[in-house]
Length: 285
Image (cartoon, rainbow, N blue to C red; front, side):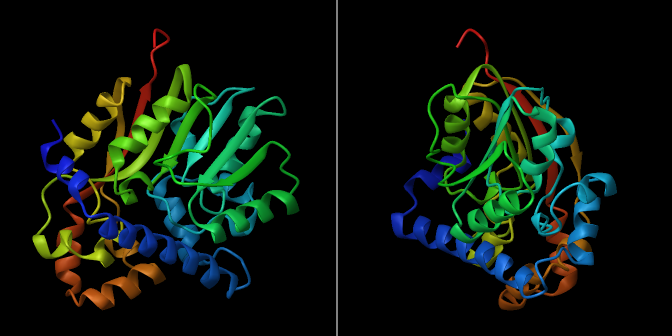
């Protein structure tokens, strides 16, 4: 019954706030660092995205600076997106998945990205304006409290973002709330296959690195079910190459603060996995 994870409900408000601010600062700095390189995806970001499942064709079809190399999968590749759908992306970042979905939903469809980082929303909105995406919009908001009405979207997607939330069960309840009956949930995310050492779980830097805040795989799936979803299915699971993940600039900075040997980081990386999960909101709901 999510016993380990539910301990987070008693987390002090200031601790939750500290984590959210650290996550927001990290993603804001990602935008700033990317712009300092001319607002273009570098080789590391492109390689990371390829490892996550994006094809060269997909990466070439979107605005160059929409890819910041922050995902752990490609939810668009296995989401059941149809013409005319309204699709919501939780933690949309610079817009990579929203822009890929845009062509799938067509002119009669709509894509909404929600992100809590103002710099990300500004970057994504700029990408949409400058590249003529008429059916894509971005909203500032928290995924634990979505700025959308009940039963208003057909599909919810997310890419390596739910693990950063301090209240993951609430995220899934919100996703369930905004989905129409018969709606679909598709997420790529980081989960744990074994418990982490205490010094990692208590590290703010490790949380920002998508490690310390990750749930055990069984608890993650249970949280989706408890939110009301049915047909919860793991459609893919893989170990993300530790050396590639640890090569990202923001992670390098966090790692240097933690002062952990590389061999220990690689071992800890083996405790986590990238999974792809799909689920549905019953038409009877």
